[in-house]
Image (cartoon, rainbow, N blue to C red):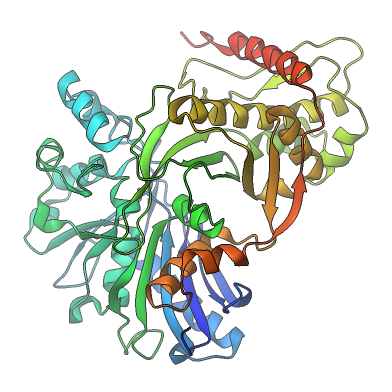
Length: 498
């Protein structure tokens, strides 16, 4: 075991950046968090100032070290986790971004993607495991090359946010390291899932040069040392990099095939570890790299996203006014024993996985005079659970891996009624961890394993503790009847937009 007492974790998210410090037991001993601007130049465009994010990074590192009352030299290593797909272009001679970063939600590259031939699209899907969507980084890089003249210079470098931060933390213009990990590279439309390397055909399709891209490495190894002139004031190993959803898998110690986690936020992200096998989805899911720990073989995952989960509760609060805060949903929904036959499908802007129907719109069906706001609140919680079952059923169908329990994290997991409903809808155990900061913890684990702060994944696994477990109380007949009603309600959402 390493004698240095702590591991640092930089968690760079869509709306904020935080630095967290963990001790050997995985407990948080210090943290600092700051928001950054959301830049919206026109409809469908979402940008961040990468220079501002780097400033925030330096501030949160300094703030967390101060709060924990420790020095940078007290850290055995640091890990990075980041908003995935958000793309940066910068000049390695000046150290400055050449444009604002294009954020994962941005849709400006839709027209470019529509020009790809059917043959190109088929090849992209097969090699990357992804769908053709502006969500991913490759088309954002193509946009920079077409619209930012300096992006074509030999000194221009492209990367997702992790690469930008690694380069700056390791010295920037004084010799920063340009690298990424396999999880982030797998979100670019440029990496081949089988070779775990940039693919020449894909690079040609998107017009991106190999020399401008970071070197692809594992998720857990020593990439570089921090610049002693930087916020740590000393050289600390940078030893873990994971995209945020994959980091949550590691934080939830989902190291083995068949283990899964679902993160409940504004929407849902569910991942299922398929082991060293690449499982190509036939049910509307994405295939992605789950993690690669050092020299060990990469593990892959199936990923499914649900657009509206927590935001359905926000809709009850902000648009309907039937609750004044999200926490009220549980007490209101608990005041009735069922939904009185109501189903609520919150397809406000279409349906994501596994349906992928942009023509769908939200519906509330089964209304009678007996229906109250309490029944609607309960139906909203049920909708979260049914949408999650849709994704997880698709994962089981694709992988052939039976699911016995699901690990959960995120805001709605504080709602015990919703989690019990989730167990009843799926017929499996739902378990929530004691340490809820699973994304930052996952990056810390990756870094700590690389420097032998933790000796093995077995040691890390033993640290995982549940704070609560919910077991199904429903019968198979009840689950089948309820789910059949949900599927019928989903049908009512379709073909609404011409």
